[in-house]
Amino acid sequence: MTEPIKEASEELAQWLSYPTELGCRPAKVEFTTEFDDPDGIHCMIFRFQKTLLGKWLLGIVSESGTFSEMQEYHKESELEDATRILEMLKAYWKQQADSLEES
Image (cartoon, rainbow, N blue to C red; front, side):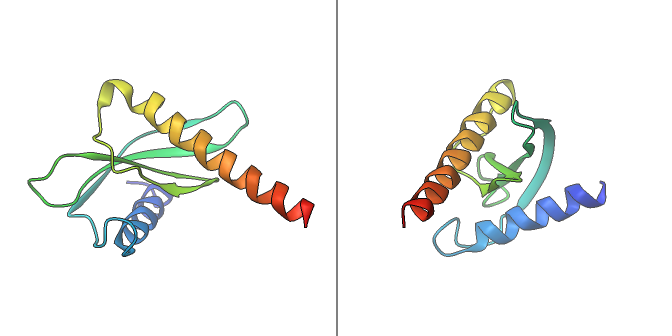
């Protein structure tokens, strides 16, 4: 595992531990793939389990943020699912920037 993947995996695990998210460190985190979106935002896709016997869930670490909707991970739709989350994060940050400009 490369250093950037290790760091991103740890970032996701720490984010998931927040009480407003998973509330604990995941039992397991695995890197699956990575991609760059049309805007050049790099995104790493991970799957994780809350417990060793739990379902695999999808999470991302990107230049726009770390996030999971706690949705089940599906290999066949991971890029589509991760892209949707990334687009949501980008829209959130754009909205934040727009509100600052209005202030």
